[in-house]
Length: 198
Image: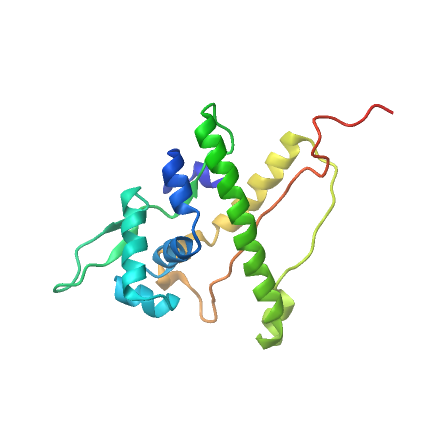
């Protein structure tokens, strides 16, 4: 199952919304709200290391495009929550503006995730042995049709979905469970329109 097939998914189709979402601090805030929220800007600042003013600004920008929203809180507190657990940005669109925004966002996501992976590898020695052994870092080369690649993605999604409820329901997290970031990247090696005739 892809993110787009979940019920709890935000579809970003506005080029300005796509560009606003593709921002390091905003992505970090959305991730926190999806796993730890609702949170006030003050608590978000404590967790991210950003200033309260910075978190407030970025939360308001996200709210402008419907990614987060304010919810009632105790007393004068104004916590924020994510409006969905998943985000879908169309990889193809007839609108050139959307296509251009997605291309820019994809470049940002590539750099963002590369830095996350690099940091994880650099600090792997700090982890207990059981976590070092459980983490995965590798690749596979497979000959697949486009339809088979879709089937493989769906199969992986089905496995991952077994654990998705733990994001919003902490009581389902077993003892020892930690937040794990799982990246899924699969791409055709030959980027040309077709193979050369031989």
